Length: 216
Image (cartoon, rainbow, N blue to C red; front, side, top):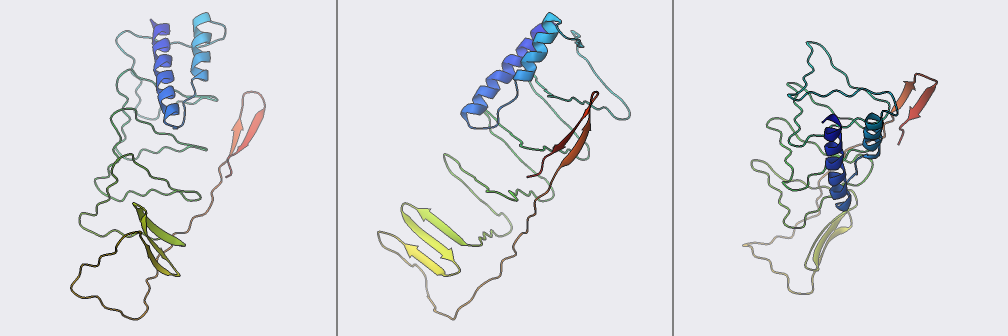
């Protein structure tokens, strides 16, 4: 039964990996899971396999740590929950991939801000259908250093420090009571400043040592 659970977990991981790969998301490492299952099945290497028909619970009034020099895999056939009464942090020296196959994603903050930054690269957002941006009780501000371009059906509005350009192959309509021509004006935007960070980790092995640098 224990090996069957490992085989089921590996099947789940591979199925989700294939779906994520088709969507160009980050793929999971199923090779290490395959190797672990083989080692525990054939007992080719020393290992520990724990199994209980009615469940396993690990609890402590202090700390619990799971650590590995290779891969750490969590797999469930139903639901996986991670709860923290205070803070939940997730950090990666390279990439973080989040993929949902069917029912979408929700990222909510009941209180406090949500900040999404690509500090030294691009921020790309796309949807096959509608994209909606709402500010219920505030305002929407979009800033760009070089230029801001709105394109729809071939018509466009381009805004830059050199001026405002409107382009279309059809008509332009202004529906207003009064149109006034006034003197030049501009608004200073508050530019965010990003810096590169480095992760320099010295890892001690049972035999020898490795020094890993994750500098960007």
